[in-house]
Length: 614
Image (cartoon, rainbow, N blue to C red; front, side):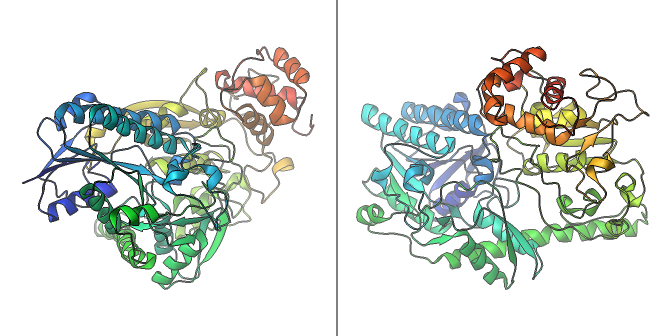
């Protein structure tokens, strides 16, 4: 019996590939950081291991294999790939995996190895026309991928081809185009467009509204998982090395994709187009080489695969709802009367939206790239109507709206996924009545970023620390969870500074809590975050503060003098003088400044008042 090794066997494509190989009668070993999330693995043997460690790579290849399938990578949808915050991890982690695996396979004498590349390697300049993108295999050069994910994939293609040329390794390379299907990410921030829209449609009642990044005219093609695996197996049985596209030629706009899913669900929904990461304007698989070399190309219509995918995601959404109902029934049975279970979107919970809408300013970013953060696009949309939320009157004064409609202190304790982190922290800190304490379990690396100190500050760290004191109070190993996640977690305590309140003269009744928000010292407390940057009665306007902050971070790795001059449209000599007054060197970089440094700069730029402009 032939023996197969699948790297990344706990992921979406990898877990499906393991099942396909078992159905074909092979003995299969899988390796990944985690087991498949949504079903039991079909592998004969499964090793939990980190392929960034060369010792693990040698361990999993210490027995003869006829074929190795290298699918393991640090990846996700647009919300993960295009945030800018994950670039280093994507390149470092995936490059390490491929460097380790190609060497381990060579030393172990593996007969044949498959590498999964991506359509993201294609140049951005060939994909600007949504109606006519150029993605033939020979169009990859001159190289200009639109993401670090694409650059790493292109590098690894060359890595495997170099091992073939120099060491005779038998390799096969395919460039995947937007593979989708059941049992993939659908709500963890790494989901791709088909799963994201299936989830949104399944969660939204008929006649409701869903969000979409961009104008929806950007185009893509999407390939169902079964046809992807058919292409992979045909390539491995052929003499063709590749690289070759494996994707569908049925190109649709993102608007059309949403319409297809609505049609499957039997719902009529409106679409709200919001800012967000778009990637290239158009992308479609060119299958001429695939058909020429393999005598085959995908043919199933998009709607057929989408119907299966929607049914599965709808089932997952309903499963979540049933869990909430079961908890309500259990509390009722135990006669617990002081707990209310709210099943809905926390980002739309009315308690935190006194103006009837979400905050609009995009301050809490994982990325230093202005307006490029898919994890935190401008927050828009409706609200969840719950008994608790209905107690709150839109006409209630800003300073009197809290839980239960009273100005009661409250705390927030939550274990939240990565994609929700910046959204929720921002929502709580910018609300009219912020909690006294926020205790969150989040990814360890994100917690460390939030708690950063100079010279390692970021927009996220400065935004949170402007409003609150932060500290990590515990770390939790990934080995403490089942199923085991990919990363460790941390418990972070965020204590909003009780130093001010919205000035009604500036904010105005009924306006968003953070709109032109000016904080003045609260006489009931001793500490203000700007107390060491000027007189105690100074005002600090958040709009001005974040305007200066975003200008300072507008271009990564550039000097503060250049960023502030271009970002604020102020001559360099004036910027240099202000920096000197603030005791800062013009060659410093934004990440070296503390919160008090930025407050001091804001006062100097705005003459220490909120109503004077430079």
